[in-house]
Length: 432
Image (cartoon, rainbow, N blue to C red; front, side, top):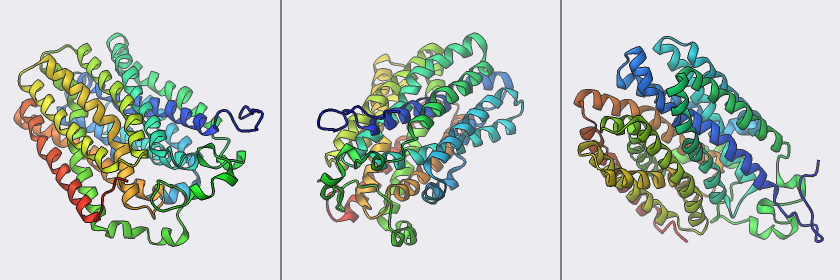
């Protein structure tokens, strides 16, 4: 099989890493678009059919993240089993679990299946930066932003599509459709392109450079070099958790994603409760996802140019603005506030993860991307698991989304404080 087209100078016209990135984009389109964005649309029909509380149904969304403890083993798992096996297992677990959801008739059964789906998602998510780090160095954040843009674009397309299927055929058929898409569009293309494991097999270095020309540029401690850590670094992995700066970043992450997850999980129900139709709610959900798909690569380019701290501050401002805009929608419905929310939250959702990953990588350059990402991602996923349940309980107690969303301004503000504290502890700017 011809992997690349060669010109007269025998330089590949299209770096094979872009094919890898394309497959990861498509896989994330289904894994994330079908597993999270589309899944929140099941909250309303489940509440109506089974009579469960809002906290219980919101918990089914967050149960996706209950496998968080396994994330801490991500670096060792990728080294022992390899990313190809882990990616295949992760996608398969999610496909089988979502296909079995229509057979469940008890809340505990759905929680079990949803937790297994989460385990598959976690396996998939941990592997994505590791794969891209093998193929990209100077464009690592940009490539990561594109890969994660697939997750958000999946929400843009699959959100309205799933809503349409639910309206016409019911939520059970929607589950089967998502499962089929996971196999056809997520699993098969990814396994095909990953038959080439690294650019070294093509006589290339990362970013498509010739190996003999890239030796000097592939070294240094201030870049986003995400190669494998040395044995000594593997043995000292625990030092990451003994760093005060890491814990400040972790606290900022928890506060940030508490606000983000609360809005993401309840936004469709909130828009409906504000007097808008279910179709309008799905359009808003899709618009947020569409903007997120654009903002990921955009902020990735900024991060690759060294604007790490500045991008992080922008993310904080966008999050706080989206909380305030959604609070206005909940308290006094306004089309202008709804549009402002969709724009600010969409930009936040797309740029958040890539911004945090870049910040942790720049702050701890001696650790591999598998180590830093697994450690940081653990705190994100724990927050994504617990925050929707907490927000659901607040709604059940207050009976008002207006008060509930307003409370989220507290963690949004705390996240900014912790981020600045982490910058001060660093002693010098994270930007270059």
